Amino acid sequence: MGTILDRCLRVGHVMMMEFHLAPVDSSVLLDGLKSLLWLVLLLISRVLIVRWISRNHALSMETKRRWVVTTRNWIVFSFLLGLAVIWAHELQVFAVSMVALAAALVLATKELLLCWSGAALRVAGKVYSVGDRIQIAGYRGVVLDHDAFATKLLEIGPGQTTHLYTGRVTIFPNSLLFTTPLIKENPAQEYGLYTITVPLRGEEDWQEAEQRLLAAAKAECEPFMQEASRHMKLLEETDLLEAPSPEPRVTIQLPEPGRISLVLRFPALDRGRSRVEQAILRRFLTRPRHTE
Image 1: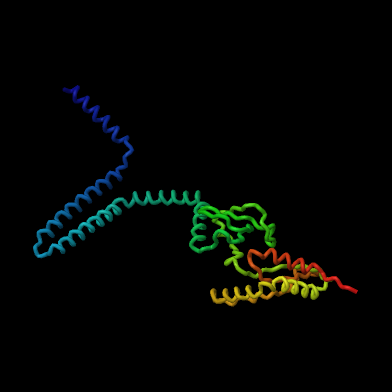
Image 2: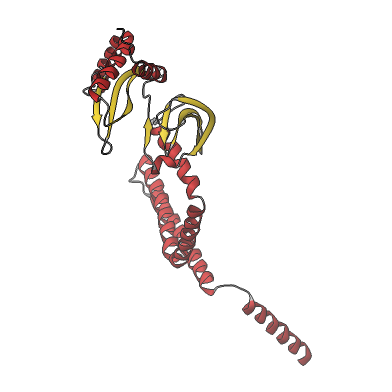
């Protein structure tokens, strides 16, 4: 008898040791027990309340159904509220862990999120679409394609003053829309106003050069001047702004001592801008021959 008792005591001791070694948090067990008791208490309360409602003959069937539904909703709300109170500490630890995880994910995918946000900005704000000519962060070209991550351009250049296709394709991430200003060169693919800068030396006759440059611009722009004026008027009525005159004009700049720059503003179709610019420059550089 004593041997059997000793064996039982040894088995019980081993079981107690294993129980103490198990990685079970007593606070979690206590919170689980509290949650179970809270659930049982609410279920009993619901049964009692529904029974009282069903046996109350002073209430109509519609009122009874409404009170039963209301009771059920309040029981569910009370159960969730009680769980939040009981597990507040564990939820706090879990929330801190989730915040840390979210912060790590944001840091790891920051550029990706910025690209997605830039794509959303482009779509919501109708910033540009395929076929538009844009400039951003030193990139300049015609939009060939765009998706949730990047935009593809057919490069125009070289530089910012040349309007020839280079044949190269530029791809920039949509995140640049949040950090860099974007210039849209042809908002309506119609007539626009463009500039040409002609540098002169200080000893040159800038007045004579100004007259020749203005005459060259008027001669080249004369065939479409009425159409350009009509477009500017339409732009003024549509956007409720005072549109500038499309007439060619020349302004003078002094970039440095001894240097003079003539800046010509002229109208042109967006697609024909380069042709008109080259025609004006060629006419300006071709001096008339004086016959004796």
